[in-house]
Amino acid sequence: MRYLLICVLLTLTACDRPAEAPADLILTGAVHTGAAARPLAEAVAVRDGRIIAVGSTAEIQALAGPQTRLLDAPGLQIYPGFADSHVHLAGVGERELTLNLAGTPSLAALKARIAAEAARANPGEWITGRGWIETHWQPPVFPTRDDLDAAAPDNPVFIERADGHGAVANSRALQIAGIDPATPDPFGGQILRDEAGRATGMLLDKAQALVIRHIPAPDAARQKQYLETGARTYAALGWTQAQIAGNDLAQVARLRELYRQGRIGIRIVDAVRGPSEDAWRLIREKAQWFAIGDFDGRFTVRTIKVSIDGALGSRGAAMLEPYGDADTSGFLTWKAEDVVPLYQAALKAGIQVETHAIGDRANRQVLDWYAQVLHAVPADARAVADPRWRIEHAQILSGADVPRFAALGVIPSMQPSHAIGDLFFAARRIGNARLAHAYAWRELLDTGVVIPCGTDAPVEKGDPRIEFYAAVTRRALDGYQGEGWHPEQVMTRAEALSCLTLWPAYAVFEEDKRGTIEPGKYADFTVLDTDLLHAEPAAILAARVLYTIVGGEIVYPAP
Image (cartoon, rainbow, N blue to C red):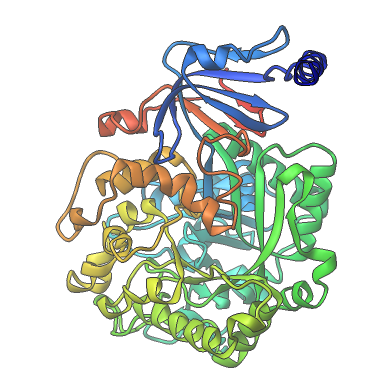
């Protein structure tokens, strides 16, 4: 009798328990989970911004209620939310709102664009822009001050190459900056000169600052507009997260304000550029600036970004041997005494480090410095035992340095689109022999590392379809593949998906929160109309973004 009474009481208690709440959102289609245990499912259910179930259509639809929103149009291809592991988000917004020179087909066209801008400007007003690249011009040479003088004689002009590591200024701009034949090259930069010693107008890396400091800076409202526009542009491209590769603390504050105002929908992981006073402030004033998952998991600040060399296209990348088409080996932009103490302090404080390195000399130097610091600061002296330090780009490597990434636990954060752009001119810059370990995705993956993929936008377009396509084909957008492009370095389709999803999550310590479609993780999805894992290469580039969903919220619906 007592046993029966207990059973009756248990039954009554179970009957009184409220039913589980229905899902807020259900998506039905081909669910590419990115999870090894179940890579493909039919539907996924979301409640309170998290995934609650993944399974068959019948299983998931049983979780629907009267208020559940259903996304079940035919042909939906549902992926874990794409994350760009390396982007300059304000630059993306600035590109959309200012003089965008991307795709300028020739020097004559560049001069025409500048002349048209000068016709609209007031005399003496600065003309600035970004995005030109001379790779496909005939001949493929940098523009000069004289070219810009002819287009805009009454205005100072400063226009950046697409990579941001080189810019050309006209004579008025150079005069304002006080650059003359006697001006020395700053450390970490170069003033290109003609045979007579006269500045050509082309300024590399830190030499750009000689002019930039004279250009009126956009005010805070304009800066916020750049960030908001960049985030909106990224949502429309299918990105659910942007990992910003270098900011200052003022921009961190602007991002916080935009989140408080509800003006940014995607997630952002921000890095503070160093060596700088701001980078040291992040370490010293960690309680004020350091953040993990603020604004409902959407904003994180835990990283310092250092740039150690320039770019291959502008010949500022630091190489072990001279360039094949110029009398230079590039240059490093910082000295050990500037960088190593910052690395050590960051490691002790639990702040992640990522370092831009493109040339083989730069990559070796950064690996050497990382090894030195990781050895000097043992695990029990670190705030985070697994620091997950990164090298951004890791473009040109010596074969001897390839296995060092895995040995040191260093993450190569790479951009597939750089290869299919750079390989048009890379052989001319450094010769075919050094391309054997360039953009070496397969070679690095085979050592056991992961490769989070980014775009480096606005250097590149910032389109995840291009990154996926480049990773699996290593071909130009029209299908061209030239000599020395090393097709054996491609990724598999599954790896390319991880490159845009799980591996970027791992690179920012979020693999337990996002990167795959599994119960308990954030409901971040990129929804396309194309199966990237099986489509023909051209179809990858033509895929259409239907929805971008962050935390169960649709932040971009296709028109």
